[in-house]
Structures are given as C-alpha cells and as structure tokens.
Length: 430
Image 1 (cartoon, one colour):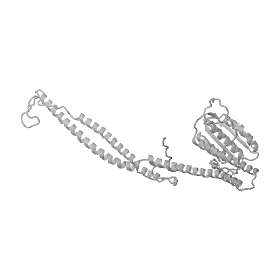
Image 2 (cartoon, rainbow, N blue to C red):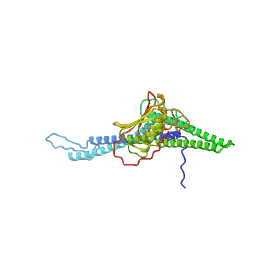
Image 3 (tube, one colour):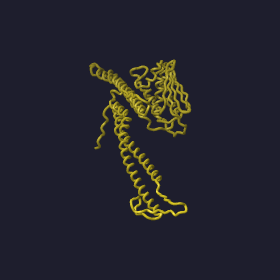
C-alpha cells in the first residue's frame, strides 16, 4: 500500500514563511560569489599575462648586425681565445652574427621562461588574495540579506503583522525587503479574512443547529405532543436543513470560484444576461420589483457557468435589496478593451464607506433570519470576476441602491458552437 504523504504542519502563514527562509541561503550565495570573484580574477589575469607575454616576445631583438671598417674595406672580426663573450671563436662576420643570434635566442627564451614563471606565481598569490577579499566583500554585500532572513524566521502566523522595515538606499536589497513587506501585508490581510470567514461561517451554521436541537428537545420533553406538533417541528427542521444545504452550496461555489477558471470558451454577456433575466423576472414581480434590460453585444471568454452565476447573483441581490415599486436596470455593452455588464437598482441608502464591505463574505445590509440569504452572493461575484481577470467596481447611488459594473477583457466576436441551453431554476447563491 503506498504511503500517504504527511500533511503540512502549522498554519498557512507559517508554512509560507518557512518556504521563503529555505530558499534564502546567504552562506551558499557567499561561497558562490567568492568563487565567482576568484574565477573572474584568474581569467582576467591569465588574459593579461598572455598579452604581456606576446608583447615582450615580439619586442625582443633576435638579430645582431656587426660592421667594422670603412665602406671600401671588407668587414672582418677576429676573436682570440681567452675570456670574453665568445671564447675560441674565429671567423668572419657571418659566423659571428649566427653565433650572436643563437646566443640572443637562448637568452630570450630564458628571459621569457622566467617571465612566465614569475608572472604565474604572482597570479597565483593574487588569486588567493582576491578570494579572501571576495569572501569579505560578499559577506558585506549579503549582510542585509542575512538580517532579513533572521527576521523572516521569527515571523509566524501569530506575529505576521511585523515587517522588515529595512532602511537604506533604494538598491536591490531595499527593493527585496519592500517586496517581502508587501507580501507579508497581503498575507496578513488574507489570514484576517480567513479568520473572519471561519468565524462567520461557524456563526451562520451554529444558529440553525441550535434551532434544530431545540426543536428535537421540545419534541422529546413535551409528553402531550401530538402528531400535528411533531409534523410542525419536522417541517421546521426540514426548512432549516434546506437553509443549511443552501449555505454549504454557496460556500462550495465560493471556494470553486476562488480556485480559478479551468476552461475558457467564447461567450457573450448579452446572451447570458437575457437568459438570466428571463428566469429571474417572475420572482422579482412577486416582490414588486421591475427588471429592465438593455443588452448589446459584449463578447468575452471564460467559464460560461461561472459568468452566468455572476449575473444571476448580481440581479438577485439587486432584486432582494430593493424597495416596493423599485426597479433593477441591467445593461451590457463593449468598449475598446472590455465587455461590460452593469447592474443598478433602487433600494435603501448605502454608506459609501460600507460599499466595499458588501463584497466580503457574510456581510449584508440587513439580517433577516430564515430569508435564505447568507451574505455570500457578492463575495461569489468578486471571486468569479477575479478568476476571469475582470474589473469589478461598485458605488452607492445618491437616492439609494447600488451601481455594480463588471468589465471583462474584450474578445473579438466569433461564431460560437451551438450548445443547448442549461436548465434554470432561478436560484442564486446569496
């Protein structure tokens, strides 16, 4: 049986920080930099030695000219035996020139050999010195990196609010520290959002569970309970169970939306919007809300099911958070770069500083027990928009309500393959 992999230990923030510290290895980087300095010095020294050797070799004289006497006299040299540069040598100038040339060649070769040996020894000594200096310089260069590594190792999920806050010139190390601080800031916000999400989800699930327990205990404690009372309790339990199922389905949709788009296909926001409005108008009429739609071609690409869910959630929320006799306006159009969906509605006043919070999980304008709305609809909308690289903006209307705009990347219109329409129930994840 294959061994199951061990689950990662510790919270998400701790695991990310540990991975960062494992990738940062200043000792190994210092050794690599030192070796690089040494290799570069040896290479440049060898090139310089070669150039010097060639220059000296070409500049040394190898030919000796000897001339004695006047222009009309035959040059002649006579070397007597005894001490001197050429003992025992006797002959004409040609023999002397050849002997001098041979002597000069031997002397030149000896000098070049000495030059090569002495330069090689000097190069080796300087290479060792350059390695030592390279080690010291690399240590000084990497000192801020070691400081950052030590600080990162001290950061965990409990103190993710701490920052490196490296001071100094705007060099690569400062940019790296600022990038790590930015990453820690995003990680802190993600962890806080994760904690709020868990707390809100636990609260949303705890309330119906408490009601279920109370209904069950009431049926057990009441000795005079009748069939009708049992039936009433069971009907309430069934309603609560449906609400819990709706909440879990919304949570699953939110998780799948945040995961990203697995497949992308050509689609038109106008077609999806018309289908959504056709399914949602009957429910809006029951609430006394009018839905107006004006669709123009808005071609884009993405997961049709997720984009459809985005449209349904926006229109359903605009219908629910409305006023009697109010309306919802839905339009689609395209610009030079985007396919745009706009949903605006009448409704209660929304403080401008609270608009962004409406897109957080479990945040809603008003809380009504048993209304089937959990505050996840706009969170799902934001997750789907992010997965499709769409820009989502929202602003409060002066006379109440919201204007929400989703701008998807524009795609050139192309004939899409025919596919059957999906069955609709008019249900939104809210």
